[in-house]
Image 1 (tube, rainbow, N blue to C red):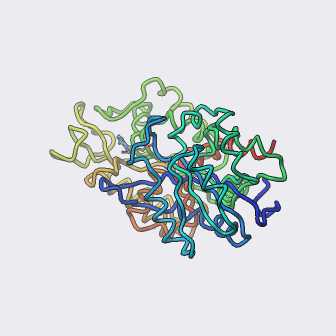
Image 2 (image 1 turned 30 degrees about the vertical axis):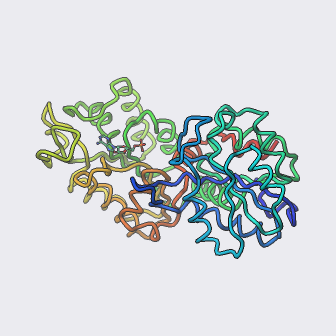
Image 3 (image 1 turned 180 degrees about the horizontal axis):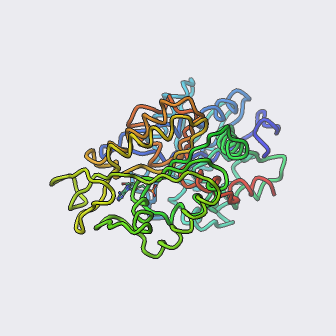
Length: 397
Ligand code: AMP
């Protein structure tokens, strides 16, 4: 993959597609700015080469055409200003490809930074509209994709836009290159034992990733809601726990494949159960074999945590994707927190797949202890699945 270092950018107008889709709390404060910090290397590289820098990102899912303040990139610009520490103000355009954006882009001087408003204010972004892509492209000489977390989506700024530029004028930014190289290198040549820890809500979302991982890893640990489909496939009563009945055969096939390939396959041996999907009411710690008919499992239990810790003990490489329970509720967050601590405590190379899992590691205070925390959830799954991603393919054509 061609990176920004391989192309001539000095003094040019550079459009950098970033992923500034950061989580915010109810008061609008950014709670995790890793995605903004992740983009700084590429932005600084351009500023140091006297480029006129245009940054663009989507933020959540606004209704196209409706400029609602809560979807504005204003807080991102404030954070970026603090993090970049440059003398010039970072300007925010009030639109995406409208008059304000174009005027401000045309008046940029070397070393100055302009941020366009939320790309998804324009319907053309998610429609991968080529006319919209050309409007974006008309503002810049160079296209850089540094939005790893958005690369699996064929949207205009990710797919149609880079296709407007020839090979000499487009490349991956440092963050995108780092993410892709890290996953590629680890999956291709892991130091063993290699352990995959997979959790989250459903088997269906991670089925292909699980299949691919079985060919590569030595051990698989399953937690979260998806564990119940496997437990049911083994014949256990799982009460009202989350389950995908249409995937029971698939779950059995995966467990048989694991056995055939000599991959050790671990499921929770105990679970934290409740009668409602809520923190109110009584929670019980029960063996996985003893879930009452009208109860549901919402976290792995302490015995599972101890077992999984043993399993991780000799790991040299660990990939973790998906929480062990409903970690958004404190009562059911323990299993995920312990998993985060246990992974962080190993001497293994540890890779945390983005989204919820990165959120758990952040809440557990373990981010700095992990070797690599990906900024993309869906995108990192795509890499594990070995799928081609539109954002990366578009840089090659
Ligand atoms: P995913 O997006 O598939 O990685 O799933 C993440 C979600 O799975 C989180 O929002 C968790 O609350 C949810 N989750 C984890 N364990 C369970 C469980 N036992 N029952 C229901 N949801 C769960």
